[in-house]
Structure formats: structure tokens, C-alpha cells
Image (cartoon, rainbow, N blue to C red; front, side):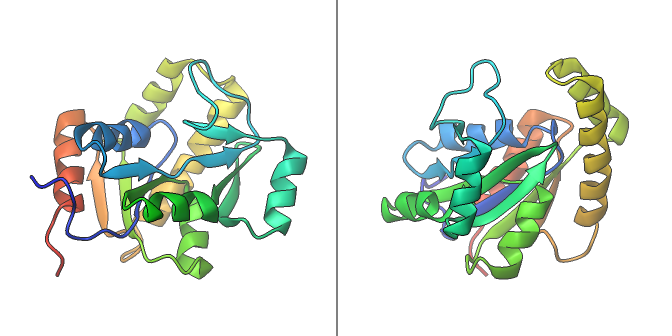
Length: 195
């Protein structure tokens, strides 16, 4: 497979928390070094163990985040599980200027914002769990959230799964019940010839 996809538009990967979208996106970057780049989002939440400033997220205060909103610095921003997340216009522009295909890992509200008024022509992929029960088991297995946060994520997952079932919202829906198979499907979508 060639290292540069025929279609160089940004790739938006979305899906419920815990579905494995970040793992799939990272595998795409690792398999094709020098071709793709993450758009590192800003967030007001605290770093999880192992997360690195500037690599996983830009961790900022709520005041800084509000200031960035007022400067129209984001192509999209949303509140998820009581924390703000946003994708910076500058981060996308910087990566595209380097000739890289930008990969965005964003939630449903961000997808809606991006589609509505960002001016960015992108391709949209939704990563879906095999079942809601499988997603709940995975989230519980992570052990990173308190029960009330877990319930918020599960409630949000229901809304996201319903939104993804709307025809035309996403260009591709991939069920992540087997990582290798799901990755192969993602890679084939990313590298398919332009129509």
C-alpha cells in the first residue's frame, strides 16, 4: 500500500468513549510513519496516567479554554463528561502545511460543529462497538472513571450510536469487535481511490 492516500482530506474518527477509536487512529499513524498526524486537542480535564502534554492533549485551565473560544481558535469544541474539548485551527493548519494528512479523534458534538461551519472538508468515520454491553464492559474494565462519570459516558454513547445511525452523517461505520479486522477496514477506507 502506498504511503500517501489518494484523498488527502483530514480524517475524522468518532465514536463512543472506550470504543477503541484512539487505538485504531494510533495504529494508522504507526503503520504509515510520516504520512499522518494527529490534531492534538485542547482539554480542561486532568491528564490520565501516561498522557503527555502536547502529544495526547494540550491540558489547559477553563479560563484559558474560554479565552481560546472567544478568539475563535477552534474549528470545533464541546463539553463531554463535564470537561471541555476543542480542536485548534492552528494545529490542523500546521500539520497540513507539513504535507501530512490530519487525523482528528473527536466526539459527536465536535462532528456536528465541524460539519456545520468549520469550512474544513473532511472524511468521517464512526467506530462502533459490537454491542452496548460490550462497550460497557470495556469502559468498566478500564477502571479510569467513577460510577457517575461512567454512567454519563454510557448515556452519551447511546446518543452517539443513535446519531451515527442517521444516513449520510458518516462516510464509513466500522464495528470494532476485532482490532485487526477493524484496522484493516479503516486502512482500506483511508486508502481507497478517489471517486
